[in-house]
Length: 240
Image 1 (cartoon, rainbow, N blue to C red):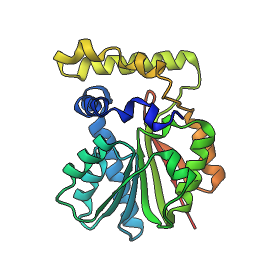
Image 2 (tube, rainbow, N blue to C red):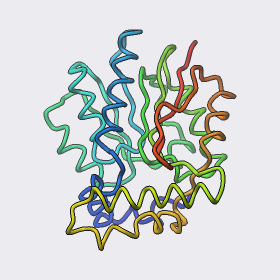
Image 3 (cartoon, one colour):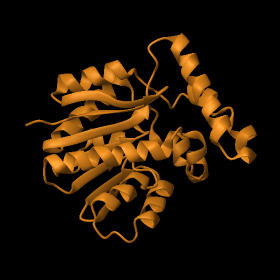
Image 4 (cartoon, one colour):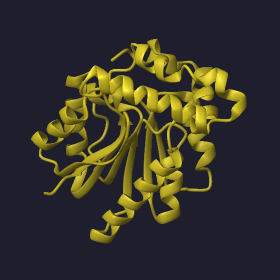
């Protein structure tokens, strides 16, 4: 993975531009949030516990929506971007039970700052920046920080198993953008899928590789819960 300070995400203007246009180029972003809320509600119906960790929290959208389902939620949000953390603080300013940590994945994996455990750990559109070994290391980190019965949920882009399918899924993504983005942004956003593929900061791995890694670490009920082209929601539970 490119060091955070060498990536585009360290540029506040880039991060702000991403936030301002995310709904225009992330397919069915609202649906991704709704599925996350459903899975969180299902988890809470099976067990008690109010603590969650958001790794690569961005502007805090997912945590904000989960507070609607559980006002007693206690959330720790981690991101390496000052711009993203500032946006998350603004979005969540009415929620006192929030803690913000500025750290990159590399920093978390190199020097684990906490032995705290959580009932729900989430990561959205961030893990694809890690190489395969780092992904597995992060999955182990998450497993060690989950309470028994805790749920790990990943919303991310994945690498298609073949080049033909990769081309198909990127074409599907482009078509979605052209049909759903603000018409004034079509010229600006129609190249997003190609830019994603050519960006060296992006290191997506196949869904199958990541499901197998989760399973080998000890997660249970490992599966893909939703998929649209290269966009997937997947994860697993720490049983004991």
